[in-house]
Image 1: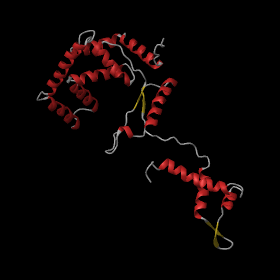
Image 2: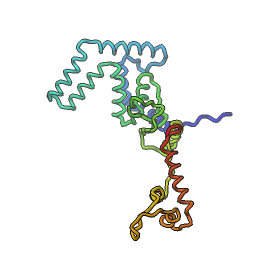
Image 3: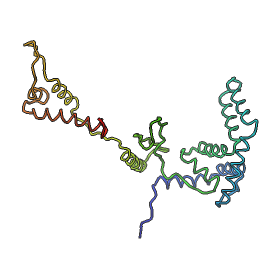
Image 4: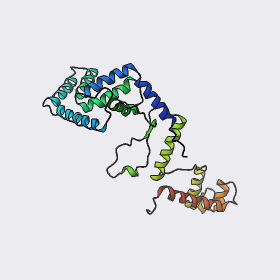
Length: 269
């Protein structure tokens, strides 16, 4: 018999938090007001048919507001007052937000965001608050992080080939959050060819060996003339013994091999 699926602790915590929120009287009063404004029955929409009928009317009502001749003019008037310094920034944002929420689509998302801010919820609760308002179902974020968002891509980029992985946490991460996030990060890293570098303990010494080896000669201050250096001399000066001539050659070859592996794409020179 298969074992029952075990949810992450963060999901269980988030679900309990949503249940606690739903039991809050002030929250319920706000939800009731939002539902009344949006034309949603008291307990939320329970069937697919109810959801479709409401969605159609919600979209039509939004289009109707946007289609009013004076709608955009009123928005410009509020902005013009602010630019002319007839109202301060606080009053401007209060009025412009109310103006935007005249559109039912904006009102719906704006109220969910308002509830998240008012009740000090993590940002990833917004969709779940919206689900409760519209459908009366209690849902919760499964994780407290997401992979992303990515910044705007350049014209020659594709998201599938971008080789950096942003992670957004919505709460103080627990050890479980970090472990689960790392699983996803490692998957993205593997499939996008991201590098992993090992430490190079003697990089400064090895680069000095390479530079001396490639130069091939030194200047003798006594004789006042250049002379050809040997790997034994390089080994004596930088490795502590002239018996490590072979090590000098190995270090030079290994540096070039490492450069090729790290900095040259396969099939390109």
